[in-house]
Length: 243
Image (cartoon, rainbow, N blue to C red; front, side, top):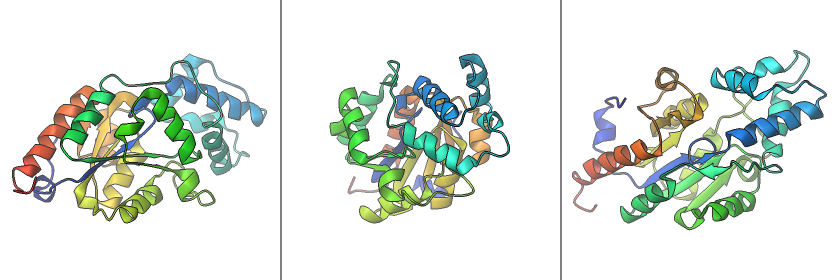
């Protein structure tokens, strides 16, 4: 499922890997379902059953649950705020996440987490502590702390502003970073910012849609992601005597 990418990326030494959070590092799909229904209920709208939700989620058609008179930007903003207030017993890191992060630290690679949740960094940090992976993270960036009053009117789930802030804060160049996400807007953002961008299928997107949105690579899960990242990082280090 790997695809070739430009020579400029192959010869670059990488300093950081930036991960999306939900459906990339942690499985919170049942939480998504709970929060969606909570938000629909706040608007007095009907709540779908799980099978209906999953089919719409998989096809990226959840907007069809909203009548035309509903302001979609405000709805999804409230949804992202509600994500901080509700949990599911099913929330957990994907298999292999801790091992992957440990390996990146061994390779001297910085690890960052970015999320579109309208949550405070501390709330996300506490969650990562519960999962036992907080100490492996060099920084957390959320929509709440970076741009709480400004949402992308064209794509409510864009993380572009968050990632640009991260790069600036840590004096990183886009070409020095790898971005991993599960959703089409993540791929679009990665390309726009200039990051080598990897899609994972744990978010139930298709490989075709992720590639079309801008992914350089698509992998099945965290286990296959670990193998790919090792190849990319070691290949780049082979071209840089300082690695």
